[in-house]
Image 1 (cartoon, rainbow, N blue to C red):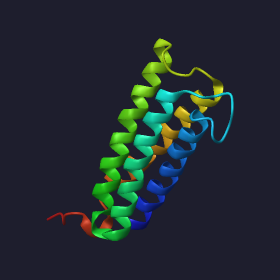
Image 2 (cartoon, one colour; image 1 turned 135 degrees about the vertical axis):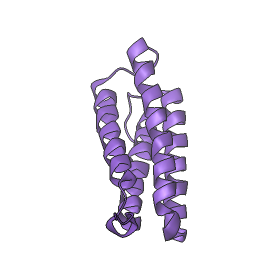
Image 3 (tube, rainbow, N blue to C red; image 1 turned 180 degrees about the horizontal axis):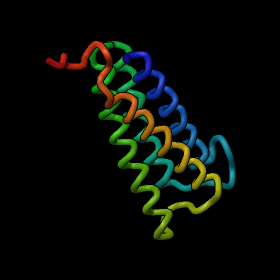
Image 4 (cartoon, rainbow, N blue to C red; image 1 turned 90 degrees about the vertical axis):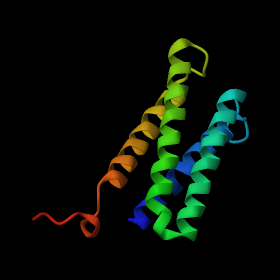
Amino acid sequence: MARVARWFLAVETVAFLGAAGVHAGVLWRGHEHARAATAETVIGVVLGLALLAAAARPRWSRRAAIGAQAFALLGTAVGLFTIAIGVGPRTAPDLAFHVAIVATLVVGLLRLARPTAGLREATP
């Protein structure tokens, strides 16, 4: 379970920090948006800190991943809301990123929320 948690956290951290780099104009010019870059940086840092916690304390992996992914999903929902009301960036790459990252976060949360075989309670 710890390996799965770290894998999801690593992928999501890279995705959010990459999106922040795009919105900061570092990785791709023409899609700058300071508020989106700030939000994505905060989410990426939270995911990265959870990844470090999971690596340092494997027993914390599941909790760290679930907490960070829930935070990221909430932040992504806010981002989708800003797109919907016209405040956030409304480009095809932004929409594609949001769809892909929501799917990744939901799959990660569902995968980590399931009890593992070794942790299931015995049935009488």
